[in-house]
Length: 222
Ligand SMILES: C[S@@+](CC[C@H](N)C(=O)[O-])C[C@H]1O[C@@H](n2cnc3c(N)ncnc32)[C@H](O)[C@@H]1O
Image 1 (tube, helix red, strand yellow):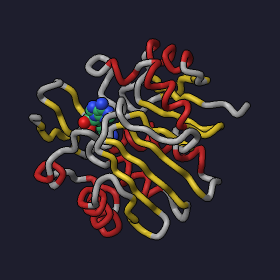
Image 2 (cartoon, helix red, strand yellow; image 1 turned 90 degrees about the horizontal axis):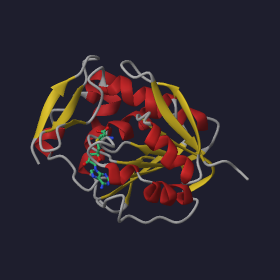
Image 3 (cartoon, rainbow, N blue to C red; image 1 turned 30 degrees about the vertical axis):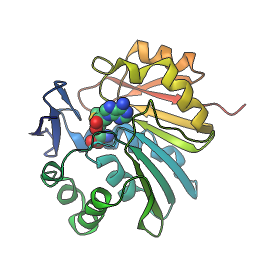
């Protein structure tokens, strides 16, 4: 896997995967995009819950874990991140997220996110438990109704259409609790239709800089 570091418009870096010709975040700002799509449009919906259970599809740099940690206050968070191809430590060491967020608080947490063991629960602090799983979305399995919130952050439907399929969304729909939410940066009509076919109620909401809309999908309580 050939990975390059790229600077985005908000001063945060992202990764570029040469083999797939894909960037991990928006060129208009990695932190800006992740905050908008996953924190403001996802995590915020559960701010009154004492306990939130999050699943991230495509952990990559670990930015979404760090942002969730920084925004979760005293909530109890159980965070499961799946990533079959984690970037090398030499790449991770060049990511500037902790210093752009809150160096003193974020630096040790970011280190812990990346150095902690895979495929087991670890504590980032007394309120935040993390489980990193080195499997693909296609192979991973969870119990029904495990999660409140899914951050769907796979590579784009152009390069990995198999991840944005009705088949995968049906599995995710089952893993979500009733009232659960999936958020993603994509606004594709085909993604919207696949989510609807899987049972989701879908809306398009304003996107971050450089993107008019993004998709948010609900597993309605019946
Ligand atoms: C858009 S990038 C992730 C961005 C990441 N959330 C971040 O903030 O850095 C997509 C990620 O999905 C991972 N991925 C690739 N194939 C996958 C699969 N079959 N299942 C789950 N994740 C996959 C890639 O390795 C990559 O890290």
